[in-house]
Structures are given as structure tokens and as C-alpha cells.
Image (cartoon, rainbow over all chains, first blue to last red; front, side, top):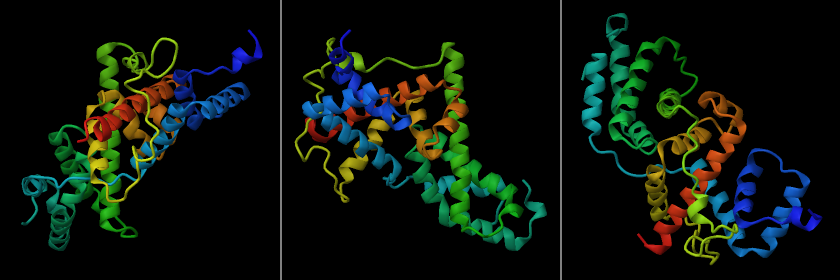
Amino acid sequence: MGVIDTLKVSCSKASVLIERRELHKLDLFERVGLGFHLRICGACKAYEKQSALIDRWLEERRDSGTPTDIDSVRESIYRRIDLPR
Amino acid sequence: MTTATKTSAQQTQFAEWVRVHTGDLLRFARNRVKDPAVADDLVQLTFVSAWETLDRFAGDSSPRTWLFAILKHKLADHYRKVYREGIKVSGTETVGDDPSETLFVPNGHWHSDHRPQHEEDVFQEDDENEKLDRALRHCLDALPEHWRTVVEMKYLLDKDSDAIREALGLSETNYWQQVHRAKLKLRACIEDRLIRKNH
């Protein structure tokens, strides 16, 4: 297998490398291969950006929704601990 | 329960905490587990634990911070249990179906229906974008439970991958495979909701 083949990265492989990169360092071939792929592939470039955004949303997650039945949960807690209302 | 050992001032104080913080704790829990009944129970257990260990609450942090810390522990315990039970049922580490099979064609290119769009406005960042929060929540709920567990644990345990792997009993390869698969699915789902169906 030639050097070019070693460096060839498919989109499927690129998505794996983008995620794995965050967990531990890629080896030299993987880094060069991924870098080259990202330069020529708009879809994977978009994936990289969106993946990072999803991480950020998850990290800085704004909790949405107004919980219903807060009162009944509160009531269960008062009962369970036997607290004065 | 253990009310007898507490003073009435403590009881009144604690009742006030229940009144003030239940709503926010519930919102937090319900955004992180699919079944609202489970979320409710975790919040109740949080207050029970807080009440039982009230003597240890030194007051260096706010009651809110303290209660949230307890809830996060309860959530981590819950995920751990769910995950381990899943393994027991299936007999193996549950990696689950590989979404790569539908998202990519055999030569490794993106399937034309699932290729990430690179127009600027697809995943636009917008602080007011409630649509995005809703999509994220919907798509987390739509993930298979063990993948969601891995994703949630990652943020509960501050992205400490060793701690997560240890808690869930995952090999390193298995861990990042699950992170990768969950991410592929999550991304495809969010994109689908945000643009293709335009919810």
C-alpha cells in the first residue's frame, strides 16, 4: 500500500477521526489524512463544525420547558420527609 | 422519616427549600431522562438524601448548588444502573446498531440524503433560538437509551472519559465508538428537525 493510500480518508472514516480526536491524539497519518480530507470535502467540514456546536450546546445546555405537576412532586416530598407545609 | 432529630427551625427552612427549588431541579432532571416519572423520583430522592445529610451541609455553598450536586449524583447512579442492566439483558456491551450503515454509502461517502449541509444558516448560532433547544431535547430523547447514557454522563462527569468508562464499565474503543455513533445520530436528527422538516 502506497503512502497516498495510507493517507486516503473516506467521509465515514473522517467522522470517526473527528470524534476520536477529542478523546485522544490521532497518529501522524490520521492527522495528515484528516486534514487533507477536510480541505477538499465541504460536507465533512460542515460535520466538523456541527459536531463541535452540538458539544457546546450539550455543555452549556439551557434547560427548556416548564415542568408540569411541580405541586404534586412537592407534595410527595413533603409527605415523604414529613415536613410542615 | 428522620424529622424527629431535626429542630422545627430546620424543618421550616427545609420546607422552604423544597418550595423554592423543586421546579428548577425538576426541569433539570426532566431534560436529562426520558421518563418524567423517573425524573420526578430522582428529585424526590434528592430531597430525601439532602434531609438525611442536612448536618453535613456546611453552608459554604448555596442550598441550590448543594441540591443540584446531589441531583447530579442521583442522575449518574441512575445512568449507571440503566446501562449495566442493559448489558445484563443483552449479555454483551451494548454498542448498538451502527448508524454509519444508513448515513454513508458503501464507499464511505455521505449518503445524499444525509450529507451535512454547509450553507451558513443551517446550524446557525442564535441565543434566542428556542427551536434549537427543543430539537436537541427531542433528539436526545430519540436516542437509544445506552447512547444517551454515554452522552449525558460525559457532561455530568465533566468530560472525564476515564471516570465515565469506569462508571459504565466500558473499554476505550467501545467508549469512543458509542460517542461517535451517538453523535452521528444526534446530528442527523437535529439537522432533520431544523431544516428538512422545519419544525
